[in-house]
Image (cartoon, rainbow, N blue to C red; front, side):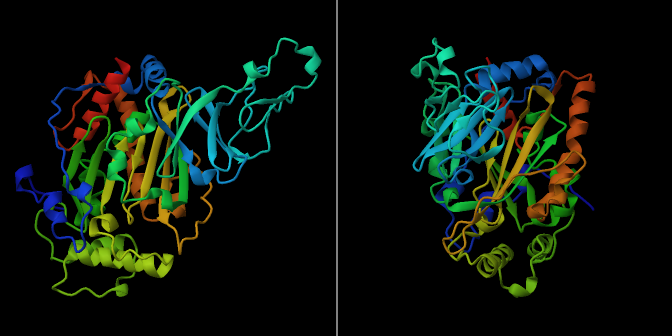
Length: 448
């Protein structure tokens, strides 16, 4: 495939593309926040150093709000999910119909974990000796209580962890003196007012232990610079080099336009080619809607997607803008949550350390779908892939699976190459990788 050289000034911008939308575009998507963040290299040892990992545990993971589960994962009283990060383990439980609480997953007798994975329980009972707590963390029962004169009920409540919810996501924070989640999210709630992820359900949840540091895996999804080399099959319908990167205080955003051709292509395609290539890629029957010569290609692709939602999901997207139906709009909610608010591209990513191994991480991908006729199906159970399985072995990920396999193929090479390098740092592009640079600048503030 022939590609060409060009400068950023020569490319059609995301904002110019949005002006052709067939529906009103949400105002927050018409905003830009592009910043020059400098050119300094990023030290390579931060991706594999055990000492740096330990610093992250103490100054990052113990201090930040982090997504633990979805509210739909614990819909009933007694439902719980165990969330692990580094050496920490947390029980997130619905203690009342209208209350969610989180506790350290450790018995106050001799430290045994109280819960594993997820489930429903009437009480939190230690499997070792039977010490039992109510769902609100109060001590309920100690076998042979006569032999523990020193134990006072109030002092033996399960230690609690801060909990807050936003858009259907349950967040926890280990720091008892932390700022509120609302404050931590800064401008994110304003941006998501129209997107209502709390009204969607988890149609897929796939996880895998990846052979790379959590930051290495995360950064693969913070830039579109890699698309030309890693995903050449999508260049016909992806505006990669002209994506928009918005930098905020703690968080950032990327907008990647689809149903437009890549600026890298050597010659212009036929006007309708990007739209038809996208429709073929996502395996939608083009007969759903015939395209005419006068029809805007993005409007056509968006309308085909609307028809799919209407016919197969009974969801009316007639008022949803083309960009929400088509584009890869991703917000990095620092430090490790990539939230995609669009309807057609509603992936949610989470990256976290795998125990205390800086060379591995847990990567999770969720697909959130609008509910059919107001009926909320149960959330999909987590599907753990083995080390031998690929993301494309999870059929629920549909066309995203093979693309994720291409991303994953780079991660082990990256992790090994970082260790083998004679160069002290990694070099980032000034604009296309600006979200990565911003992420590291925010991370440095926490760790300094």
